[in-house]
Image 1 (cartoon, rainbow, N blue to C red):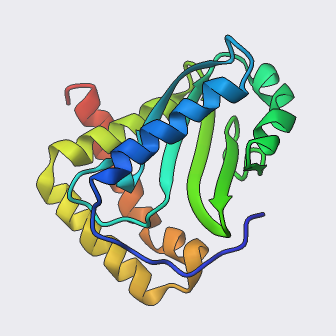
Image 2: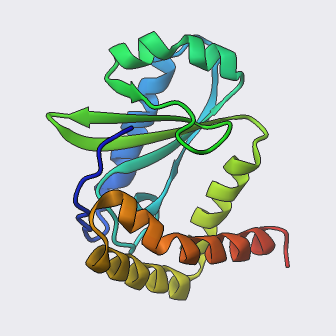
Amino acid sequence: MPAPFPVVLAPHDPRWAEAARVEAERLPRVLPEGTLDETHHIGSTAIEGLIAKPILDLLPVIADADAFDAARPALEAAGYLWWGEYGLPGRRYLTREVDGVRIAHLHAYVRGSDEITRHLAFRDYVRAHPAVRDAYAAEKERARSVAEGTYGYADEKAAFVRRVEADALRWLKGG
């Protein structure tokens, strides 16, 4: 289990999009051909104008979980730490640090997973609704002020995130 660390929130940095692209481009060089369909930039660093922990969240869409699992040694050799499902069935969770600083989280799911839809709907909904983005920023600040470390922070904002996810999925379906 990755150790919790203090939550630092930073103003949106337009360089995060390029950093996410560069990080995503590392994966096809590490994974066997045909393993990876595409990689999405998700999470708060993917939402312009939103404060965020300066850690990239990427969602690799994989063709086959067994092939991805078999690539674990190659991913670890490329600097990723493998955490398995890490509490979310079907997910492959990896982190990457550079000089002791966490720079990326990978949340890999097999093509067709509802979790892919959930993550992308949340990102796109918050991008499309500035009032929701601003409310999320306020919730992030509130959670950071009362929680100790990343686990408490995630727990503090979980109810807000679940409500926005539900709204985002309805929005995605046109409702």
